[in-house]
Length: 328
Image (tube, rainbow, N blue to C red; front, side, top):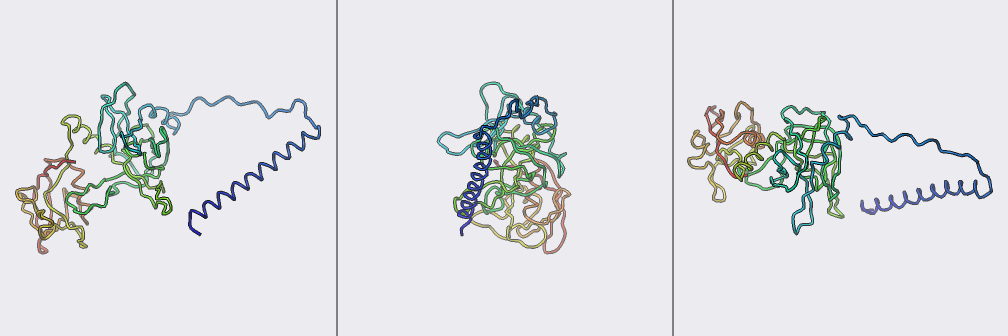
């Protein structure tokens, strides 16, 4: 039986069991009272005082502080929604955008994603499935997770997120919302989820694998957009071979689809790299594959000078490379 029908059958069975249980309880109460048996002075007890104070470090305490600074974002003419959060100056950070918001809302405090550790408690806030003000919680389940938002080939232009992974439930619509630590500081911008999806409905949802852009990276991008109106990212000016199976990241051996293997007068060319060279170290970081190199590049700013170690026909070479820039 297809998964959807099994689920429907289970839901129906559960409803029937619930109805029977409710009927039995209700019937018992009715039978007790319909016979004329009454219990004068019967009470279910005194209603306890409502809890009003939550510890500031509890999920409820964190949620109370950050919810006023989280917004739902809906693009005109679009059925989908997203999330965003207020930062200093009245700006809103959301995925791929920094926008100005009219009116006064509290700004969230930005933390330091460099201090995040696996196992740290986190809270995610946003508008999953259009449900504004939704709070979920979990832990940081992995760090430095390479996540590619789309399956676009042409590695030279790929946008990888060096992501914080969390098991806090993240669903469509959470994108752009904050991931905060136990102090209520934003440590990431929710950006992507891994999902198995539903083959019957085409819907996808959380399976405990959500990914957030580290706030240190988002802070740099937001500052650049606010100051200049645009954002850039670092590049080396070379096309990498995504099919290379050896250790390291290889520059393609020849131009592809009209794109140079090594951009003339670009950063890699000026550093002396050539088509077919295999980069094995970048800025002191060991490189074992293409994804690792892209991550290393994206965590640095344009204009930074890094030491690159590469192999050419098996011979080790060392070069100094100044990163270039490209629009984000």
